[in-house]
Length: 196
Image (cartoon, rainbow, N blue to C red):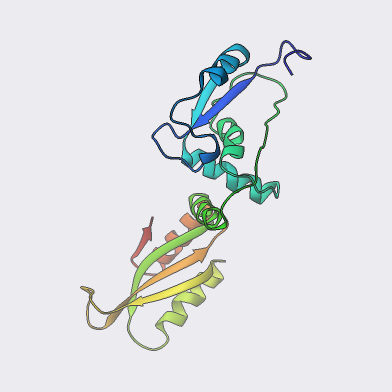
């Protein structure tokens, strides 16, 4: 690339500086001398990204581009998303490897969607009598929240005898929708806590 376009900037991206990373395909304790001599010769810059940025890149590539990319293959996009790659003009990112464990991919997707405001987990209390849960769920449905799980907590809780605690997992559009739902629930008289 440099031989064809001498003015191009080439940026390397590394991960796992703390001893563990979901980009295990590029994690090494100590880079080899030969490898580093080549990189020192051709790279204009070497930047690092953490697992949060890498997971964000994996989710973005899967959701928007329909590409399954392992952690090591997503580090270039992670560096771009984080603003760690300077320069101007067109950018090309090498996406290498789709060898990601399905259970890790599920965890990354859940985490990424939660951070993106696509999942909202809340805890509230309702009167422990017939119709109260249906009332709450109907109000959430009117506010365009999609309920995917409901848990009742009565035992082992320090709550009044006539109440039950309810934990809800909702699918939402984005962070703005999450905030709107929380505000609306409070306006309906529910004390609501967002769980992280």
